[in-house]
Length: 141
Image (cartoon, rainbow, N blue to C red):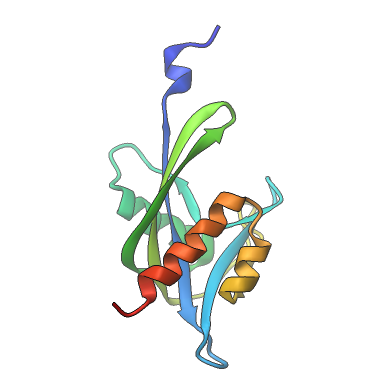
């Protein structure tokens, strides 16, 4: 028997972190590797009680990548089941500011990839849609 509280939606937030390549000025997207899940994803995490989603997204980016981020457009919200519970993750486009990545138990690797390479490296197909949404948000109107 499941209890109602078991089906409470888990609220999380994250960013599709991007920068201009220091080499050729092309767009690069930051992906993180989580050893616990052995997956590649965008930086994200659960919100703290009472935390605003954008604040949580920026906190997670800093914690997981070591970079401060300047938020841009809100991207599509992803909804899916995680461990049998509904999960809702709000995302923003965010330009990477200064920072240095330090591996931790939670995030052991970080890559800066072209949008095409990032799409190919992401573990979850749903995360690939966020790459497309980022590109749309950065296009001049």
